[in-house]
Amino acid sequence: MAIERTLSIIKPDATRRNLTGKINAKFEEAGLRIVAQKRIHLTEAQAGQFYEVHKERPFYGELCQFMASAPVVVQVLEGEGAVAKNREVMGATNPAEAADGTVRKEFALSIGENSVHGSDSAENAAIEIAFFFSGLELVG
Ligand code: RTP
Ligand code: MG
Image (cartoon, rainbow, N blue to C red; front, side, top):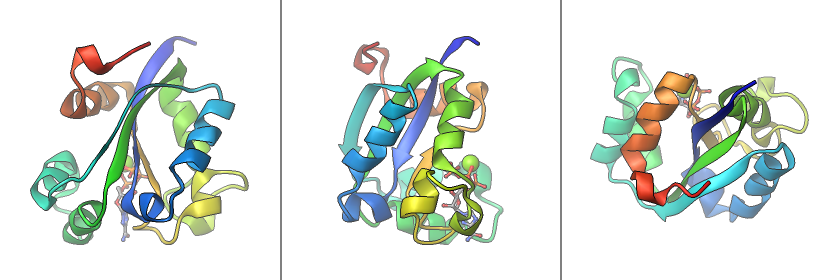
């Protein structure tokens, strides 16, 4: 499988509880390399722009408010099949359905406050990485 990059976000529920290191350990143990990382505090408007694809969904307003409620850690993960591998490490969107050992099983509080975001395709990964990072910030 090809080496890919994917965009990951450690969400406000996790940064508030100081879980960045524990979550990063899971990525690294799975063979994903953190090739870029920064802590930022999104405005609600910026969160809305990032989640534009969900703007018709009933949870959109709540999601944008939550994503702007505390700092997030945005990062680029690199590795073989990184998009799918990251989603495996994350677990199902709803923590009640997430497999044992996944980030969401261990740390998520609810379907909304579910600790991490990961790109869902290589195509979206490229768009999402460009949203947060310049080429100079990606250090493979
Ligand atoms: P993500 O985009 O954050 O990696 O998560 P995902 O693919 O597993 O889930 P997606 O369907 O793309 O939804 C994006 C985020 O919206 C919140 N959500 N809330 N209240 C709800 O029913 C609900 N459903 C989704 C979650 O934070 C989800 O990760
Ligand atoms: Mg998604």
